[in-house]
Amino acid sequence: MRDKTLIISNIIDNLRRVFQILNEQSKKNKRETGLTGPQLWAIKTINENSPVNVSDLANKLYLHPTTVIGIIDRLEKQNLVKRRRSKNDRRVVWIELTNKGNHLVKSAPEVAQGLLVEGLEEISTNNLIEIDRSMKLLVKIFGAQKTPPKLILSTEVNVPNNKDIKRSVNPK
Image 1 (spheres, rainbow, N blue to C red):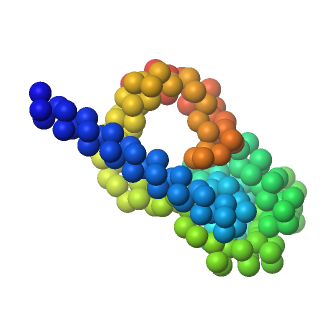
Image 2 (cartoon, rainbow, N blue to C red; image 1 turned 60 degrees about the horizontal axis):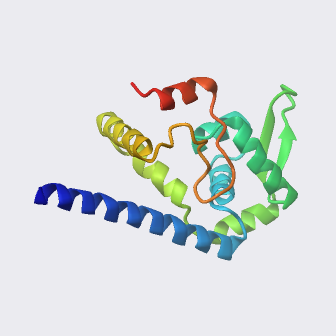
């Protein structure tokens, strides 16, 4: 029984650490840049892949394209990004940073979501499967299987497609 108590204590402490770093990082991002974590993450990703289209950006951010369009709309209103239609295919829109966006990204702090993705991409598929199963179990413990996934410390919801919803509600 003592071992189980210690394991539960370790799990709760590790969750506390995760929430703490996310909260601290989010406050730092907002204080230093005026942007939410997802907005700053998008700018950093655009900077690394510019010019980039919405689909490719969504894939790199592990977000639904509709969610990314909302983020881009807000960044464009702040004159941090600009859209440019492709000359070859008018349906394709390229996203680039403006001078103001380039200036901001140079001094911007790290983004928790970016660090998380980088770390996860380094992990083996077997370990990712194990983490995925464990996370689904935690979600189930909280009864949050049907809760729309908001971006970390943001009000924006990552709009999943119906297949994703069914998979997260009925994990295999």
